[in-house]
Image (tube, rainbow, N blue to C red; front, side):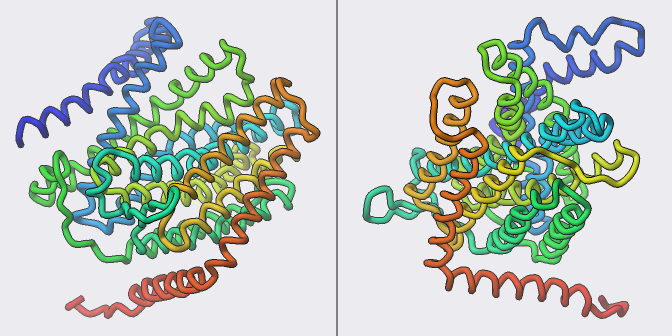
Amino acid sequence: MNRRTLAAMVAAVALTMPWVAVWGAATILPWLGSGAPALLQIGSTLGTVIVTGLAVLGASFLLAWAAETAEKDVPQAFAIAVLAVLAVAPEYAVDALYAWNAGQFAGTERGFEAGNLAVANMTGANRILIGLGWAGIALFTIFRRGSATDPAVEQRPGFLADVVVLDREIGLEIVFLLVATLWAFAVPLNGGIDGFDMLFLIGLYALYIAVILRGDVEPDMDHVGVPAYLQTLRKPLRIGSVVLLFAYSGAMIFTAVEPFAHGLEHLGQQVGIPSFFMIQWIAPLASEAPELIVVAYLVNKARSTAGFNALISSKLNQWTLLIGTLVVVYSLALGRYGTLPFDPKQSAEIWLTAAQSFFAIALLIRFEISVKEALTLLVLFISQVCLEFLIIREVVSIPVSSTQLLLVYSAIYIALGTVLFVRRRRALGRLVRRTAGTVGDAMSRSGSRPRSADD
């Protein structure tokens, strides 16, 4: 191991150490009768944000190295799927907390509000992932220094016409995401998230994992730095290092992001940002930070395709597992099966999130996204959030309510997406047929394997 590789590993772990010390003290010392919980304040809310933010940053690099190293032994899509689940695990924890409270206090105003917060946090996270994640990473990929050496960047004549070209293997994720998106439009029609939503969405993700697990391990790529060193280890040691990195980084992210998000919420409230707005936007932004850091790291290494794969995989698992598990947590807290209820405002939030996803998928049908398209995604997202904030704060007066504003933006996304799907219908048809073939081949490969000793 050269000095540069060692220094990178030590630096990443060192970023997590202050949080390990604080979290460990606050967890262990109470058992000894000490007043350690006060340590979690770390002197101030700003201190909490700094310490936990550094831990998230360090853990994000460890997570990215683990995923890159794992590509030597498992299909890249599966390694990225694991990375995506771990990177957004804090989002699951925050939403599960609200869904649990909704079940615990069902029938009360507090319970109904908790259900609304679960949906708001979930939709905020999903829209951030596309509005800032997909759009921002596309723009970063094209305009970063050295983008000319990135094979994923293609320069084209015309105004804002340069594009990021995606790997066609991501077509499987795009089609699964489209199916989940179409289902999501119907979720509010049932009066809440129910058992049918759970069965369909979790089943869809289980099918996706089953398909990618039956894929082939890709030829070795030219890795550098920490992943290159770890891939030279003997297989048992290499697998052990991957598991350790996944476990440690996952633990850091899972424990640090919630206080990080709450710290940001408190800072926002101190400057007059409404609590509900903070829970929908600032908390999810904090919980998406590991994913965005990992993707920026991959893009900076000219691995833009892997970066986009990670973003799309994250969107898929949030749009299936996250929605599907909310009703499970709610029912467990309730003590029986129940539908997670929410108000008309949250119905509009779900429709807007589905509409944004519909438009974003239409952009990727040809496996590329241009500067102009990325800017459209970004501007639509930012303008909606800013307008809603201004309406809530009564800074501006427009002839629509905040709920009606969500429906207006939903219509815009659907109209734009429909136009693109019609124009690109042949590409969509090819993509659907190819995905159907991939799923069929994966299932038949599993079922037709000979059961002989030579297998």
